[in-house]
Length: 489
Image (cartoon, rainbow, N blue to C red):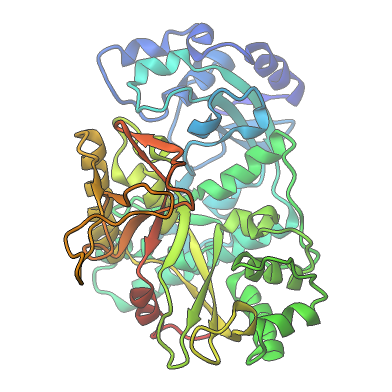
């Protein structure tokens, strides 16, 4: 049965429930089925469909609604605020709780479809989002969704450029399915391997493995949410709708600047160098090359959506690594949510759902100043399933164990050699040098290290232990070795 509405009717219904909780608007008692069931996938959407719009849920691969004659997909989506901003009254701080599942890949149908007639585009051409506040930093049982407040609704259509990106992603998946069907005597057994295409897709990941679905990545969802809350990002003048087009531009950069020093590149791009130069200047060079005055790639719409994280690697004169790679500051409350599984964690999302653009430089001489390092080239990289499961997860599990069991300790750092061997090291401020028993680089590829300049000022407190701001790092030698097999763009 078609669910036919005018946009005016939907606006009246949805504006009428904005600001109320899902429980308050549940006139058809949808939450009754959740009383003795801790988890019901999509219960918030069930309430909007059955109690607000008044039609039963279904699992058809067709848009839910017809709105003013247009097939329109309804998505009820949970938003949250980062833990550090939980008390903020600014709606601009809302972000997606997770990515947005769209539809099954359906290998049995996709190879016989054209994009315009595909299940995916039928679901995405016209969309209606209903946002609610997932107001918890713990995983809650289904019934507790009744306390979550409806934030508003948003009719959404993707731009022409977005549509091209969606088409290119869909075609990559379709072509891979076709390849599997032609090469395998048992294609069904090969379909879970489609999830490995995530390194090639700009807007989607494919999950779960057993029956892959097109799912908009969390970064793309944040772009849609940002538009609803009038959070604007810069649009590039240059059109980029696939990684091959991005790679062509990066290759052009390499042709222009390979062998040039960082100072020479900045000068050629008319980029004014600050008095104190650090590695952040490299990201600024990339944005400048793309015609933007922004400091960060994530401030540019496209790069924010595809989740491209730039990092700099400096090789020594012999081609080896010079240092480990520092990533983001650790927000312990954000990382370890009660009841959250590893696959839903911030750390998993950071490495699994993002691509990394490594801009590689080489020292002309040992310990050369940063601005004298010479550009070698770009390599784009996605961390493998093996890394995420066998290297990253042990680090995550150990860090979580220490925190949950309240086993965090501050330990003195002792001299390891010389006449003072075994004695505590004293900082210039007169305090003892200490370290926290977090996972270290000697045991893990990903490890924790604090950063601070004054031992008397330690802003983070965890399990009663005061410490410097903590960051997660990756062993530089490992990533340099890993990138050896990756071609330069």
